[in-house]
Length: 161
Ligand SMILES: Nc1nc2c(c(=O)[nH]1)N[C@H]1C(S)=C(S)[C@@H](COP(=O)(O)O)O[C@H]1N2
Ligand SMILES: [Mo]
Image (cartoon, rainbow, N blue to C red; front, side, top):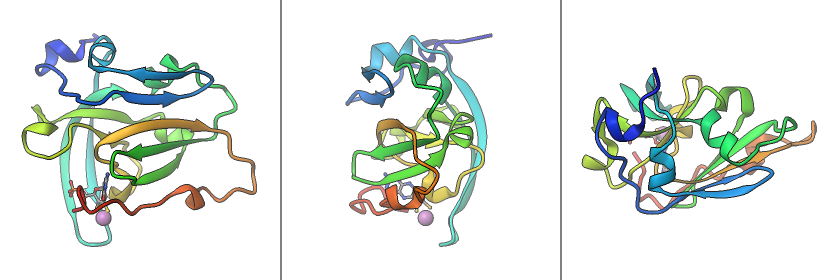
């Protein structure tokens, strides 16, 4: 059963649209996102710093977001960029299991945090669960490219743990 984000756990809270860059570049505002299906993932956010917590996240699957921008079959990686300049790069297979989450344990993320969205995927480091997602950018990296060179992993401290 597919439930729209509007009917499951209240309205999506979204101030700035999310840009999705594929063969097309789309800007998904609250209304457009609310029309997409949502799913849940239970994921532990764990970091070398000792941060560790588990929650059930609900949001729009990455697959649904990428189809809005006609992402090409050549895509190897997904860059996820936040409003604070934090940027991570994950291989596309890992990213395709992910969500743009709006709810944490049934509550809008924004009810408790200074951000509204979070990139959540089952097999990524806690450091890659980007808060305040602004851009999803589908890339085709040539075999010699180290994906880590595309990561900043340093935000403004605004959303740091
Ligand atoms: N935008 C943004 N996302 C971010 C960070 C950040 O600084 N900026 N820090 C990351 C790190 S290093 C970790 S461990 C987790 C911490 O998440 P928490 O505050 O929910 O424990 O968020 C990640 N997401
Ligand atoms: Mo971290």
